[in-house]
Image (cartoon, rainbow, N blue to C red; front, side, top):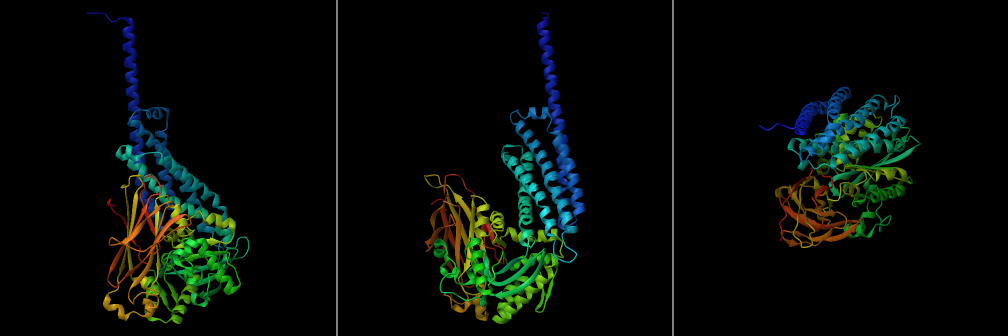
Length: 587
């Protein structure tokens, strides 16, 4: 038997030591990984409790739950951030999962500690102290919370950026799913925090914190559709002073004189899409996707009528009121009690079925005054109020414009800046479908809408074809047409047959997109194709008879060879559109 030499023995010892160290390293990482997973699972298990506390408005419970989640996340972050863990991240395959686990733990900790908890502290302060004893709100207090909102927004943006550098599809399923879940949670939270940040930056001065302001509220009526929602049928002027609001005057659209030419210059692409009626009738002010143009039109109309120029213009539709009723409860008016469940029928259907024009105006005025009285002194939980506005804002039912350039610069970057701004903010794959009624009545309360979108790579130049299909359904039974009043049908005075729903449908594609044509049932349909505000917009008129449907297909070619996954936003409707993806076949 051959003796083992001293150098060989040393090599064996060193090799054994390395093996033991490697095994210890693996065991160390394995144990810490298992412990970190337990901590993250414990944090995730608390999300249902947190959601329940937030939805019920229990800030104390929400804060306590968030602190417990933070303790678990912080522990997981500590377990996944030591030098041995970081060294293991260079190992092929396993290393990517270890790196992702570290980032998840660190970003969850950051979101909870630097965004969620400070936001809850601010919310608690606003709930307790925002409303002044004499009525109105403390504008200085609201302004003081803006740095916390701004910091939370920056924290979320930084976390989203770091998570965005991870490819979840390249990870083990549990780790990849965790990346997706945290990324989605941050995506859901960012618009809310951003809205609070923007509100704290603009609202204090808009509510008269630096001196009296004039706010003009224009109420859109979705029963007669326009790009941003509906015709601007009613107006309420408010005076804001030191956080308190008073109602100054009201007006109906019928009180504004019609002009023979637009009251301010209208861009030629907008004229091509909608004609000069955009600037000649106040009801059409929200036809343009550019809310800055809409607001300047309304501001000019109001100045002509009253001699006063609004500082702020706020556009809302009745479904915003429906959301607020979930906070205020039913509101009594001299024309009956307005409830959340009955609001659509009470304001968008029944008045046009049973009341003449004067009675309609009276009902809308008394309703607006009652709503104002209910909320003017801000005797409402601000957290519940903000939560109630979340969905309407996301749906594009609330738009705000300021005549003050510094405030408008902030607003222009938000979801409150109108349809075109919302589309741009939604990213380079966003398409928008807009509806403008051409019936001349309130038939859109009986309109159903479905939208599909999809893309395909069929071209030799590698640019994708994008198809957006819009299906309009007239839900009126043919036998019921004779029972509908002229206020509903338009009486055939605007080119549409009585009972038909006539709609100008426009699809706005990302900047640089090429037009591919519009068709119905495979047959070409006459369209107007323009670049409006840098976006490619194609528009066509669709007529739908009672009980029937029409599907119109809009085609575009992508601006570049980059892959595109189209997603669609649309004009706020009474009943939300069914939006889905569809397979696109190459010709």
